[in-house]
Structure formats: C-alpha cells, structure tokens
Image (cartoon, rainbow, N blue to C red; front, top):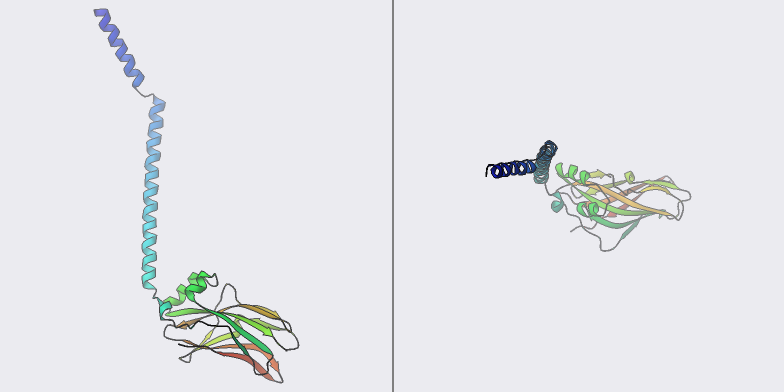
Amino acid sequence: MSFGNSSIFTILIMLVMSCSPSKDQIRLQNELAEKTSELIRVQTERDALRQQLDTLKQKTSEQSPNIETAGRVRKLDNPLVAMDRVGAVQVTLLSVLTENEALSAGRTWEHIGESFRKQGKYLVYYEVMVKNIRFQGEFNVSHYDFKLEDDKGNTYACEQTCDYITGKIHPDRSTRGGISFALYADAQPKKLIYNTGVEIDGLSLEVVFDLPTH
C-alpha cells in the first residue's frame, strides 16, 4: 500500500510538471502580452487622433461660411461669342462653373476656395477659347489678361486654375483654358473683359462680355 501511494504521488508530480509552462513559454507569453498591450495603446491613440481630426474638420467647416449659396452665378444655356471692335480676335465663353462644380471637375483646388471663403468671397470659374481671326502674326494669351467686373462696380483680377489658359495664337488658330475670380459674397458677375494686348491702327483691342444675370 505504501509503495502504491508513493507511485501515485510520483505520477501526480510528473503530471503537474508536464502541465507547467517552461521558461521559454513564459517568456513568449510575456512578450505576446506586451505586444498586445502596445497594439491596443497604438490603436487607442490612433482612434483619438482620428476623433480630433474629425472635430477639427467640423470646426473648420462651421467657421467657413457657406458663400457658395450666397454667390449668384448664372449658368449658360449656350456658349457666348464676342469679338473686339475690329474683328481681329474672337473669344468664346464655353461654360460657367460654381466653386464646387469646378472642384469636382478638377479645375481648381479645395484650399483656394476655402481661403477665399474665409475672406467672405466665392469663386466662379469660366472656360474660354480665344481665336486669332485676322491678326497678321501671333500674339500671347494668358489668364492674367482677363478681368471681371461685378454689379457693385468692383473689378477682380484672375485667379489661378488647374487648367489656366495660356499660349501663343497664330492666325486662324485658337487655344482654350480656364479662368476664375473670387467675388464678394453679395456681388454678382456683370462683365468679363479680355485685354488682347493687340493693337491695330493704334487701337488697343478688348473683348467684352455682358454676362447674363438673374
């Protein structure tokens, strides 16, 4: 009986030892626990940063007035065509886009519109085509040659666009591109003016659009 009890005790000790983790197992378990804890910490910090970013975006949106709805931009039913007074240069106004439309079409940048909204302004975009009808020689065209007048008497210089118009135009050739202007929130586009930089018989040629209004 004594021998049997001793054998059972020995077997129990062996079973306990076999179930006990080794030092390597304990080390691996500790490392796994540390890595799991680190991963949880990183994920928590990431979620907190994401929440802060969302909050910042919301505050920025609230602080930037929705000038787009205040801007009174009349869309075109059909392209408009105008020429200088001697018929040397022709400009076609192909389309008019609001800021959001121009942004969706890849014609401008979001930070540009946001910057002007903070100033109480809104962007309006025009796509134009300039053609040399009968000027003997080439001339340069640039988006800086365009200006806009509003119904309050203000004049605006052209702003940068992704597809700004530029180039040299030879006789019977044309080029097209974009122009945009940042208007005050309570103003409406009235006239689009293109200074050709061309002179014929001492006359400086301009092309003027009387823009459609509501």
